[in-house]
Each structure stands twice: as structure tokens, then as C-alpha cells.
Image 1 (cartoon, rainbow over the protein chains, first blue to last red):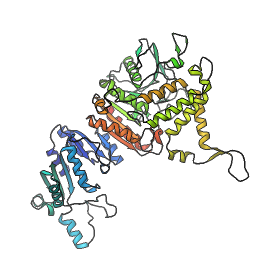
Image 2 (image 1 turned 180 degrees about the horizontal axis):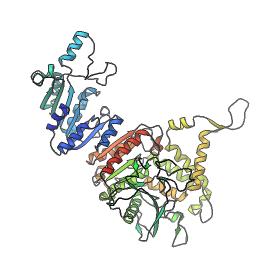
Image 3 (image 1 turned 90 degrees about the vertical axis):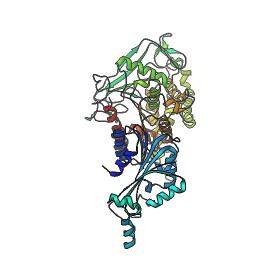
Image 4 (image 1 turned 60 degrees about the horizontal axis):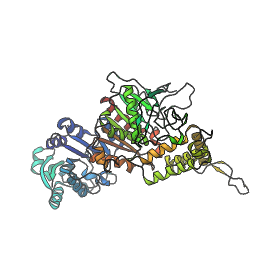
Length: 193
Length: 378
């Protein structure tokens, strides 16, 4: 199982009402439903993902996060999750604010652009990094707002967002935990207001 | 006849002796409902699905009435073995609503008190009256709880009303190309249609049957205006463009021209005026206009849906301007705020409101996926 999903699982309370932004085919929601008996709702825009998630028996709404979330009432969910989608939205800061308005707690995961590999790629080749994890070219990538671990924490500080927990995923768990901005490939944050 | 058809089907008639109290304060009865069923009711009686029809629909939703029938039922794309509403899995019930003109008691039926057709004296009906009459049909068929109540357009309104009136009698509610209430623009189109009928001299104040007349021109005109609103601008452009059926714009030619779209509308109008009853059209459009899901819940759809206990699937189509995607999103938002389980798909389709009757791959995929889940729950 994806390591970020097992971490998220740990932070979700049993029976919680969970909103998953950009839920894909519903893998995480299904896991949460099975392991935590959550009342889950997913937002997704890809038609095949929507059909797949519906087939899994999940509740999925076709809605583009970039077009706003103002149809969701304040504090109407226990947890709002966004896994590996922050870097693909038009206004990441606004989406974060909306998540914190809708959910009492939020879980955000993103690929860390401060990892040594993209740094080295850019430094040595002078070109935008392309890797197994980020296989797109600069002109066709859905990932339009890459950030680093340090960038994210700076934004949290600026906006008065409290970090409840954080967990780093990397080739070496130890290095990722000690120097996340250099060794974490994926960062997972549990935040609230 | 293709292999995934329910084949030859025969309508049945249910007779209800006990009068039904109507929203308008009057009561109606005895009355009859004509219906069809497809598939087999399982021993637990848990696999029954109710299909509610739209404005001009009826009980014949799937299959053929005879081997030389040219066209199958109106929703044959979605009902049959292996189709979205899979008749290998579900027992499907489709009826002609009360007030209809395809066999159920309606304005064209004989009023037992006068021995003459009801005509304009037939009581006005609301969607809830249909829902109550459908519940009696469910009682008669021994169906305590529907696996799903499904409807498109006006049918979707009935499905939503079911969820509020009989929350314990359905597990799933599928609402396609519908709305919680009509917009002013929608009512305006219906009023043009009604006016076309009412001002036809052959309408005879609704007593055209007694006078052996048919307000065919009014009914055709009503259908023509309705039909335009069921198609998208794009669909009409692709289907007809500015093609001519007759005449020519060449210099030196003075005869008039007829556009293909004109000929099409005339044809649709004429066919409709032969098979549909004018008083039923008035009654159905009024029921459509009067429908307001949340009226009795302080006009608060969230409060309304908090009474529902079923899961919902809502589907809309991108070019449907009669029941546009924002109307469906209102339903979805209210359901989310009421913390009801809901899924929503907005299908990219060029065909306008009519899309809900057509075999659009993504629509059929997501609808089928949802119905599989309905099947697993039943």
C-alpha cells in the first residue's frame, strides 16, 4: 500500500466525515471507509476515475477544486484530505484556506521539490526536472505549483495554520525525517486552524 | 430486435377502488394505472426498481409490444439485459402516471359521475399525487421498499419526492437531468405551450372529445416549442444546419423555401398531436411548473433532504439548458449540506436535455456503475 495512504489513515478518527479533494479512483476513500468506517465524499474531475469510484460504492462528486468550494458549508467535515494535488491547483493558498474553512482538520500531501534529486537535476543539466515520479515536461505538466517543505511551512506560518503532525517519505526514512527539505520525496501534513 | 432487449412486453392494468386524496383537496377514484414490468421480482422482493416518466412519457419504457413494432419503449437504451438498469438483476416497474393519456385514468377517461370524458374537470395533479399513486401500485405488487426509484426530468422530480414522502420505501434515488424547481424561463416555455393549446378553436374549452374535435394545431405548436428546448443549439446545427428541404435561394427563383428544421418540427408536432391528449399536456406541464421540492420545508432544500434516508445519484448534461447542470448542482449541494450520501456526474454531451434518453457512452458507464452498486445493496 502507498506509504502516504497508511500515514493518512493513522490521522483519521473512526466514523469521521471526510472530504477527499481530487480523490482519483477512490483508493484512499475506500481504505478509510473500510478501516475507519468514515462517511466519505470525494471530489474528482476525471470521468474514468469518477466511474471507477462509483463502481467501488463511494460517494463521488464531479467538481473542479479550482472552480471553488463555496458550496461546502463551514466546518461541515471532520477532515478534508488532499493527496498529491496541491501542486496541481491554480491557487494552492486559497484551496488551503478553503480546506481549513470546511474541515476541522486537514491532511495535505505533496511532492517535495526541494529534494536533492530535482535540485541536482536542475543544477547540473539546467533543465526542469523530469523523473519517474514527475514524468511531465514543463509545458504539459499538470503540476503548476511545485513547492518545497520549507515553502509549505513558511506559508503555514504566514497564514496562522497550525501543524499538528508531519510525516516525511523518502528513500531513507531516517534522512527524510532529519533533513526533510533535502531528503523527503513526499511530505504529509496534518494541519488545523 | 437485438439480443439485449427485454423482447415483447404487454402492459397490465391495476384498478384501485379506494379514492386517492389529492394535493388539490379533491379525491379521485376508483382509478386505473397501466404499467409494464421487466425482469423478475426476487424472493426477498428487494430488487424492484421504479421508473418515473417525464412530461410526455408513459409506461412503455422498454421492449416491443409486437414483433413488427418499429420502435422500442422510450428508455430502451437504459433498460434491458446487461444495460444500465439490468433486467437480469432488477424487476423494473414502469407506469403511465395518473392523468396520463396512455391508459391510466386521465382527462380522456370517462367521469363515472357524468358518463362523459373528464376533460377540463379532471382534478389538477402534483408530483406528490403521482408518488402516492405509485406507492399504492408498489403495495399491490408486494414491494415494500424499492431498490431504486429512477427518473429523468419530471421523472427525477418524482424520484426526489419519493425520497421525502416515503423515506423508508427506497434505498437509492437516481435523479437525471432534473431540478428542485423550474426556473421562470422554463415556466415561460410551458406557458407558451399551454397557450397554443388553449387558443386553438378546436380546444373547445377542454371539451373537444365531447364535440368530436382535436386541438391538433395547438398541441403540435406546443410540442414544437417544447422540442426546441429539449435540443441544444449545437445539436440542431449539426442535425439540420440551414439545409433546405424544398425551394432554392438561387437568383431568379421566387418560390418559398422550407428549411429542414421547419419540416422536422412540423413532423414532430403532427405526430405528437395524433397520439397525445391536450388536457393531459396541460395537466403535466402544470405539475412540472408547480413542483417545488422544498416549498413545504420552509423553502430550505437542506431541511427537505434531511428527511431522506436513501443514497442519491445525480446526473446532468453539459448542453442541457432546460434542466442545466447548475440546477443539478443545487440538488447535490443541498444533499451534501444535509449529509446525505450522494454522487454526481456532469456528462459532456452535445444533445441538450434529450441526452438523458440517448446512448452516450460515459453516461451509460457511470449510470451502470451506480446501478451495479444498487444491485449489490438489494
